[in-house]
Length: 141
Image 1: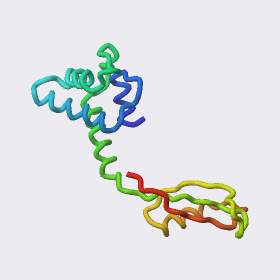
Image 2: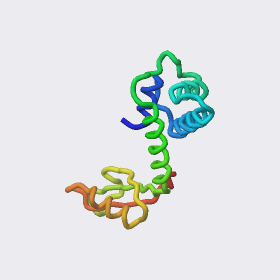
Image 3: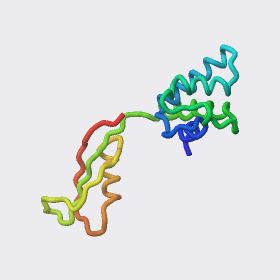
């Protein structure tokens, strides 16, 4: 379970919130605590403001540490932000014969450069496949 799943469970939300929304909730909790609100109260107030359609105060789980959850969300979000580098996506076509025009199968892989993509594609080749073509497709953020 991720910090986002834990947040959904704690607040009684129907869906796991997106990373940016969870970050906004954690920030709002911290702001309210600075103004003198207890963390449990801040969590409920922030949830009412941010998850307006889903959150109902009666669904809030009072068990478990809200401080640990807010810390976990902040760590999770900052870790994801630090690792969200651009990664190139590659389309890989596998051929059973070296002179085939139609691939036997396709897959998509992520690799930082062409050499790494080729290495990964070759490692994915099955015993009957004789050729692999690797093409750059798009950049994912």
